Each structure stands twice: as structure tokens, then as C-alpha cells.
Image 1 (cartoon, rainbow, N blue to C red):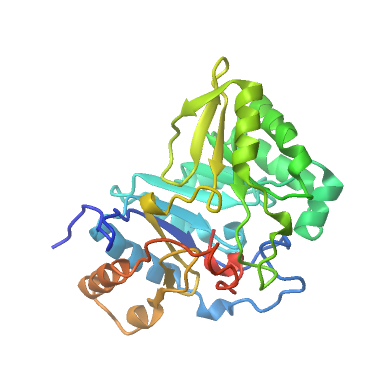
Image 2 (cartoon, rainbow, N blue to C red):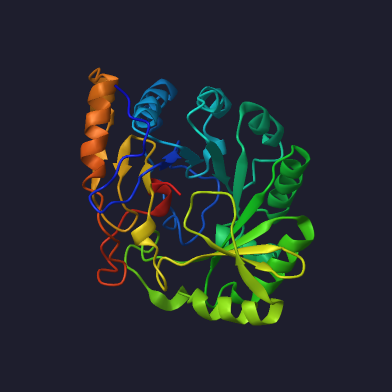
Length: 330
């Protein structure tokens, strides 16, 4: 029998949110996400099929999954994605179906994504300067992102959240300009601290920016007050008192949110990562391809969730995570 209450992990946290990666490939090469010259992607034949993904999502739903975010790599690079989205959007138990994207392919896909059932979008955008954007992304075209954002608005997506990784010495001089851009276009800016994982293999703190300092500066300048915002992620939101424009801060390093973590991540090849900053995982592909029943999948899920670590160890063991972000899922 299905139990639709979210499962409790070993530390009393309700796990109701899944980040589902549908590909580890991306058409950009952001230096903090993919190693330079990376070509060691998962063969597409090793990806879970859409039927396998839907089956595993059904198992998740049966034990209380409420929120689902589709990620990559760049999820819009996966052919036929809308067919999967249509099936997932038809499941009434999912109260929130969202998607993360770099928006470079969004101009031609926004309307179809909206029609398929995606409710909200998160867009990665680290610079508004075309040359700097190209440097960060390994040659990306800022104009394509801006056209994608325009198409998303015209398709009716709201709110659209802009995710900006705050990088010391790279884009920290653009934070207030990005906030102004978001206010002027009806977007919500979310600033994110860089974490010790990904492209470099070994953690270097030269680009880390403590967002507590930035937050305090913005609170004073814009008269920010605490706010709430739709979504199940870790961002803590503030709003301008007079205009109600919002800004979010995601601070895994300076003020971690492990005690309230409600999410796990599934890679494109079927590995369930229980914590972004730990190596614990469970490979569901053998279970799926050996004909496991929904009940067997749910039993494995519950057992795995009980192994979810209490917290990451980014500070204590900064070299622990060698996998790059695109392989993990956003």
C-alpha cells in the first residue's frame, strides 16, 4: 500500500523533493561546472529511458514525493523531453514541477514546455556582460539567454528565478546590476555560494564569496525585510520593503541549511545521490532493468533515504567530492 506522507530520513527530515537529471551533457562549458575540455560524458545508451524514469517517479510518488525539478547538464538538450514532462505533469500527486536551464535553447522551446506542464523556471545567468559571460561559459552567447528569457515570459512563466553563482574576482562587481536587471524585468534573483566540487577536481577558495557580507550590504542599501517565496529549495528570501521585489540567498558554505534539507538527486544514469556534499548513492538502474516491482523500488528508496547523511562536509573535507556538477544534477 502506498504511503503518501513524505518519508522521514534518519535525522527526522521529510524528504519530498527530487532533482531529476535527464542528461549530464551541456552546450555550455562553465568553468565551475565542467572540466576544461571535458568529453567524458555518460554514453546516451546508459541513460535511464523515459519509461524507466516514469516508473521510478511513480515509486517516489508512492512514498510521498511532492516536488520535482528537472535538471541536467542542460535538460533541454535531451531529445523528446516534452513527452516525459507531459506524463509527469499528469500525476496529481506532484504539486510542483519545475525546470532548471541555461536558457540558450529556451527561445524555441518555452511555449512547448509551458504547454507540456512545467510550472516554474530557474535560469542560470552569471553575468550581463557579453564578453564576461562568454569567458565564464566557455564561449556562450548572452543574447541567446536573453531571447530565451523573453520567450519564457511570453509563454506565461512566472515567477522566473535567475540563479547567479557569486564568484569573487569574476562577477562580484555585477551583483547590484543583476539585481537591477531582475527588478526591471520581473525576475527574482538568487545568489549562490560556490561549493568545493566540480571542474577543478581539487577545491580552491579563490572564487569563494561569503554571501553574508553581500546580504548585509544589500539589506542596508535597499531596506530589505524577510520574505517567503514559492518553491521547496534552500533559498532564504528577502524583499525590498517599498516595492516588494525579492532576492534569495543560497548559502551552503557560510550558513548551511542541512538541518532542513528535503531533497535528493537522481542522475541521468539512475544513481540517487543522497547529499550534494557526500559520496553516498544508490544505483537504481539495475533494479529497473531487472524488473523490480514498484514495491521493491519503494523498499529500496526508503532504505536509501535512511542513509542520507546529516550534513555535507565541504569545510572539513573540501577535496572529497571529485564528480563535477553536471554529472550530479543541479
